[in-house]
Image 1 (cartoon, each protein chain N blue to C red):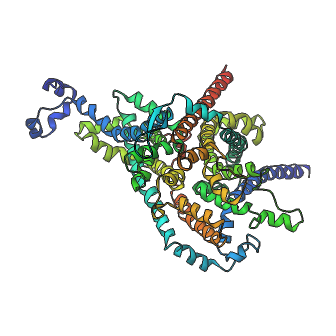
Image 2: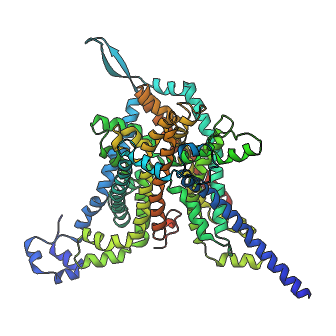
Image 3: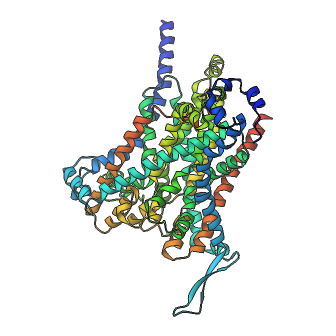
Length: 289
Length: 329
């Protein structure tokens, strides 16, 4: 009898011990999901329902809102989305490739200036990219490049943090012996990098790509400063201009909300998809190759 | 490149096996010589971009920050010439009342956002790492999702959830007869903007801390739990000290991130009167550069902000280094 009671108490104890952490985590998850749930509820509401019905109740205006969104400004939303994809996609791929090359070079070769280059880049990690935005604009407008696609792409391709991560990953994941062996087989340095280094660094590259893609996709100040043509805006700048116009005409609020809802779908999907491939332990220095 | 066949043969025995035509067409290079240029080929593009888009803008901004525009007679309206101005722009930066208020706002915001982001990230990471906790996969993904939402969009979402006419929270408090919650008024604005940053930042920092926790070998805990330590004690006494490096990293990122506050207040600005055009320093930089055409002022402020960030990050690193040393001795 007493033995049963003791075991029951022990059970209760462990169950209680596991319940609270789960509950707290669920509260955290709910906190993070609430705005996302809200925006998808709000995008179904007609402009009049938006201000009258309880926020989380769905409304009847979803199709109208979508129609309004995609016809706004002669289909500007579609263009903004395409621009975001272009900037983040091309920028992410090129940036990842350049970072991987640099990381590989810094990790796998001894050469003059290596420390100088590495520590300069490490210092670059500490400089907030955004405080560089205005100087970058001044410089690029001197070169008559401000306003073009390149003015948004080029400054975002250099990623000190991406180079740092690639270097860490290259040291851990690409054995020096394999490189030496390939050299003895007569492979060129470039060939070794492409055929041996790149495949081994792939998980690290996915991580760098995700960070860069999301970083560029989320960037606001740089395109806001650089671009003047509304048709070359990315989603962030486009939706911001929509919202600031909306303060005068509340009908635009529904369009802005619908635009926000649609814009986060691809990114969340991408993140859920790539989640299993990326190696965030890179960030905490726990790489074991 | 003084390549001699003898050293080639000695250091690269297998080169004899390679086809003779390459041997004949050009003298075999010493093995080192090709690895002499290869690293520059790999780091070259990054170095060029680094110089063009980070180093050069910094130098250029520093240069402009020491100049001023002066109107000289000549032509119909006179011509503007750039002249050396010494520290005039920097003195103006520190005398600008609006800017000092901006730094005050930034400090208040950071004091709310940084510790709470890191505290919650650590808490969630420890809970995820607690054995027996359920639905961790779901919780981890859900908490990480806001990272994929741009600051502008996050501010837009929360902005509508703050706005009295659309806020679900104010809807409830109004129904209860308590009136609306002053999210977008002077009393609530720091918390409201801080909340947007916390919401966006917790997940990313949680993942960094969590992956760092996962790399701790489980044997370390076994001894402690044999000694009768409970999960909370293990978390606080063993896990937290072991993830200090991850905490330092996330701390630095958070401080750098906090100083870059721009998108959130800019997006909320159309919704409220309490956010001025110079609410945070970056907004002042934008105003100086584009609305009042004071490029030297904007450049000086950019330099101050960049140096301030580097100094703060260095301070965090130094403090944590000192703490670690203290803990070891």
